[in-house]
Length: 550
Picture 1 (cartoon, rainbow, N blue to C red):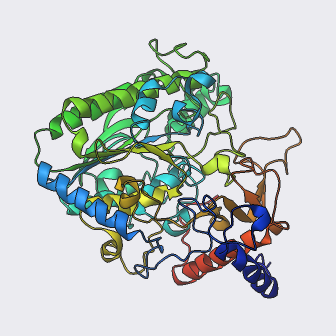
Picture 2 (cartoon, rainbow, N blue to C red):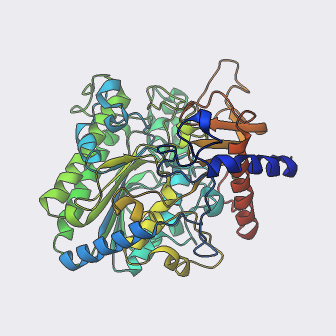
Picture 3 (cartoon, rainbow, N blue to C red):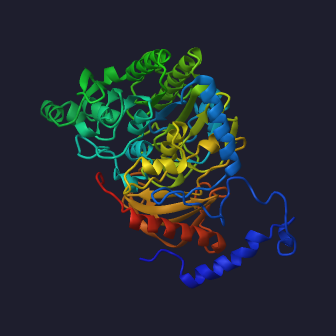
């Protein structure tokens, strides 16, 4: 089915849009009569502007020469001051929604205060339009590879020993290791249980955590969650014998994983605390090193199977296991941050705080989002995630609506390591397409603007939508009510269908994506359709990959 605008209509709408693009006015009433109205053009808005190709196998970027120049000067100065490249810390939450944190209007307002997270966020760059993939493993692989899920091929989380993962892909930790970094992974992995996809074999010097996702360790043991398994000796034995790791493990580069403990619901109560201490110990150890470090820290919380310990049970005003977990995550982050502060490492460390997807909505209590949809969908609620970046003295405190995809962390980290822009293309095979763009100048430049023109959304390995500025155009829609009489079942339930006609939303005026404006605002739909066609050309040259799918 041809989902694009007819060529004749496209030509008409583009021509019709030209006066709008070239004649800003003092008032809407005088739009055709006067040029140069102040206030009609806003930062980080690129509709009608052209992105620049910097390498054949990399996403085109919006060029900002002055902020690039300023950023390079700042990086040269900090290198001269510290004598080493900057550290990079990625702090990745699990299933935490856009509005769970105070810096996005949640926090205490929704019964789970996040004072320490908010304090750091408000000293950094809060990204109100940061995007993940629709679910956990695709997002984590996107961070590691700089590729959308359609290119790295992990379309859904691998479960219970399912094959596939990062094996054979070029990863961020491996490339940073090549640039002299110490690479450390802590916490949830979930990018392949097979040996070749384990952290110590895809670039990390050290790993402490678990291979999969927390419910795989607990739900079949929990008499309240799965009594049909937990109360059945034969079924319990069947699960024990399934080919997936059931342990909290440790491994070093190129070695075998060693089991630390069997992960029971009781052990899970303190797991995030155990990992936090490992993180603190790592940061303390790195004070004695002349090498920079990359710390990838994936929390267990706050996946739906939360088991708060005595300290955190009932600690949130909401008094739910989920909100109690958010309180604990605030403390986890605070302890890592304060360790960096105590060690004098903040001056040379970029911290990225984010979540792997929107909140799951299958099992209450769960996270919160002001947007439509949830984890598993490409509605905004499924993929717009709470995010900020912080670097003491380097990142200007502010909020920005500039679009960022978590794929951007790959080229951004490499830029900080001394491989900016098109140089990344030389670090990966020529057949590998990098969907991320270097956002270092956006983060570091004074009033920096995003270097990304568009966000592309993928559902089940297919391009489902594209966003430029405040406008989002759909080609595929998820309908969660399609097969369940009882109503909405969360982001993973329902069906996917082609969008009929011009399914277009203004995310500023209609952030819940309730009313399509495609017919009334066809001049806005036209360039979005063009962007879809441009990315289809990329997919023709760099075909989609599928290794784990539903």
